[in-house]
Image (cartoon, rainbow, N blue to C red; front, side):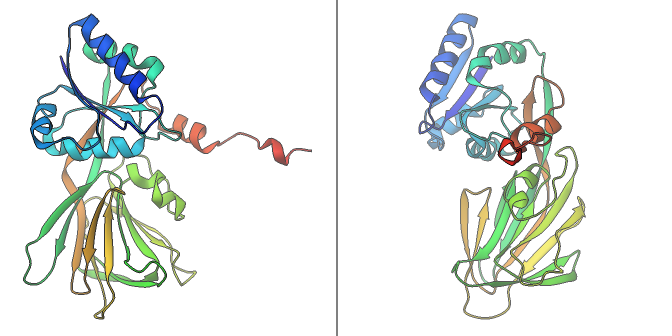
Length: 283
């Protein structure tokens, strides 16, 4: 089995995790394609995509970067959490060799996660396509000023949001920026598009959960204001007022390796401290 690895070397424990992987591959007779950077060069990128499993060493950001590299290739991704939160990761360094043994033996499950697809269109310019596992966030380039976001679903105008920004998220991304902005938590097994305004000017504005087949289009009132689109917190696109951003369910999924069965609600309890008392409130 060939195993691809990308690592966030700024994370504490990255070198230890690489050592565990190298020892495991040597002892079990597996091939390792190792990149110590989150953004591999093109030649290595092609070699990574020949692998049977893709291991990311870092936090959720490293997994999102791995998902972008994997793209439509459908290679399963195994996340190893070296960070503090790790909503997406499946295992730790201490359990890494054991987890890989299960994967090599076929004793694992695959969780398929919906992606967003998107288009950035501007008159007289080539269309730019993008995809996101977590979210696409549109905001004013000047963060000190409020923006206006004309939003349409299936061609029908639903709102002209006056807000700091607009989050278009997948169920997987519902526990990321969407959650911080007051959006709903949605099971990642669902297929849906979440529309969550960031700090809307009107108190009556609430997030929307749309069915998977609907398409969201966002436009901007004519003016001199500039906007930005950030995809999965990693890719940044500059937008002008004549730009149209369209988001829909992508025609492919991201496949995540799971070895312990369903874990979403366990992660919620663990990471968000649900059901745990705050000792500072007890007297």
